[in-house]
Every structure is written in C-alpha cells, then in structure tokens.
Amino acid sequence: KNSMPNIQKFIQSVFSLLGALLLMCTTTVYTTALVVPMFFGFFFVVRYFQASNLECKRLDSLSRGPIFSQFSECIGGIESIRVYRKEKHELGKSSKAIDKHIALDLLQQALNQWLN
Image (spheres, rainbow, N blue to C red):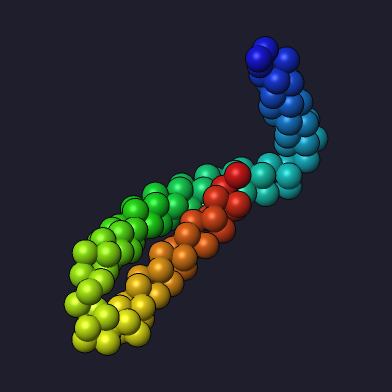
C-alpha cells in the first residue's frame, strides 16, 4: 500500500491545527491562557491513561493463566471430578476465573476506546 498520501494529509492537518492555534493565540490573550493549560492537562491525562492501559494489559495476561491451568487440571482429572461429584465446584472455580478475565478485558477495551 502507498501510505504517502495519508502521511501528507496527517502533516497537513497538524500544520493547519497549529496555524489556527497560533492565529487564535496571537489575536486574543485569553485564548492563550486557556489553550496552554489545556494542552498540558491533556498531555498528563493521556500519560496517566497510557500507564493504566499498560497495567490493565499486564493484569489481563495474568488473569489468563488460571483459566488455562484450571482447564488442563479438569481435563487431566475428569475421572476424579466425576467420581467425587465435584462438577459444580470445578465449574464455579472456572466461572470465577473467567469472570475476572472478562472484567479486565472490558476495562482494557474501554481504555483503548478512549486512547484511540
């Protein structure tokens, strides 16, 4: 694919935005007083949410381990589970692990929507 037109459009948009901000800031001092703090505030908020997203990804990958280990334990010990009639107990353990994973996955999707 030729991504050069997309890069040119992006650069053109950035310069248009910077030009508009420069024009607004030179014509009114009040705009400068609002734009500069808003820029720094936005910068710090984005950095905070990027760190949160990274931590959420780490927790998401950690939450997958118990799901797979529980599954492999159930497959390996299916005869014992059936003999001792512990199907509901094992199902409950699996459900809790999956619920934790789904909650973290939904949180990560929400963070990705905000950041993108």
